[in-house]
Image (cartoon, rainbow, N blue to C red; front, side, top):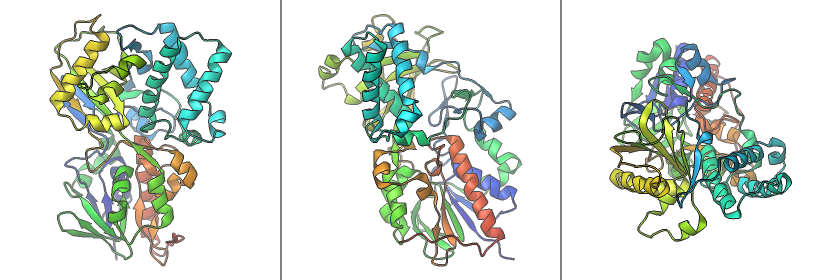
Amino acid sequence: MHHPKILIIGAGAAGIAAASRLIANNVNNITIVEAENRIGGRIFTSEFGANTVEVGAQWVHGEQNNVVYSLGAKAGLLCDNFYDIMSSGCVLSDGTSLENEATSSLFDLCREVVHDEESLSSFNGSLGDYVNKQIREKLKMNKLEVDCDALQSFLDWYQRFQNSIDGSDSWFETSAKGTVEYHECEGNLLTTWKTGGYTNIFNLLMGNNSRKIKEKIIFNKTVKRIMWDRQPVEVLCTDGQTLIGDHVLLTLSLGVLKEQVSSLFMPTLPHKKLNAIQGLGFGTVDKIFLKFPYRWWPTDCCGFSLLWKKDDVSNNSEAVPSWLTEVFGFYSVDGQPQVLCGWLVGQAARHMEQFSDLQVQEGCHQLLLRFLGNRYNIPAPDCVIRSQWHSNPHFRGSYSFRSVTSDTTNVTAADLASPLCLLNGQPVVLFGGEATHDHYYSTVHGAIETGWREADRIIELVSSPSKRFPRASL
């Protein structure tokens, strides 16, 4: 009896979810190819200070219909996030603070605007254009008295904050109507792990088959080219080895697909697939964790949102790296009383990645002194750990979003998810990963669902070898 060979490229959430589902259904002829030296992909829990930090995926977003929450809650591994960014104080670059009442009102106003699905779905254009238009109209209606400069500083900050949620460089790249495609799971959106971090999810996915799955992983193996016009498919690796598979499940990040699409596939991909890879958005969101010798900020303080005044940005010394002005805040970390986490996105994040750890550590210390030095005695951090998602050639960014380009080219996640088929309609290369999910893109639970989706497709193909799909036009 023929047992089709299955190649899974990538040992992140989608790849491990697929392997777990396949083995649970007695599809055992599997090899998992992973370019990194670890399981996890964009889930990366790292030891730091007295505990761990999440260099990658941070929270379990929602409870209902969230497979991560279902698995974690059943195992008793989840708890509510103690610190809420939205409860942090807003500090201006001259050392003053935005009044709490004004901050709260502006927060509520912005959240109301970006969650108005009816208005968003009917708006043709970018999220940035939509927000600017709606905010100014609502300010007039609500008669909220806010200084014009303070309002602009807050909106500049809120854009960076929103971009960190969406994964975009700028909300002028994000599609307004496209944001409605994302479905928010009801319940607490900031659930976290009690101990052990997000890597717990892999043990939960693999269950009793953990050892069996891990034995099927080849680490430090990078794919160079996929010859998909034949069966078995041939996968050439950078070390010169060629692997073969009757079916190949590709879970590479959209960032890698964008960078390598012209060289990775032979023959060239169908136009619809190319358009999907080029049109769907993929950005960089980075975190900087700073550990201090002691906690110098209040125990109940969630952190500090940093708002630059226009004149302070323009007068900023050229000796200060421009990326520092884009760090939109430093926030407390659960289970880490002496650690603050800084966030930044887009081009500034990619710029930060080019500096050494020491330069980043010293730069962040100077930034904190500028904003908060007049009220706290801030010691130099002991150490730093930060993400470098774009610099890593195995990721080239953080997560996907619906872009203005995806609107104009009329491409969807379904176009990215559709399999590559031979002339006879036999699917040979399948696509998984968060970017291929219709409405849970950018999330771990979305990635897992796509792994299960493609595993089910493979199981059907294995049980019905004559199964055919409509062939994509070249």
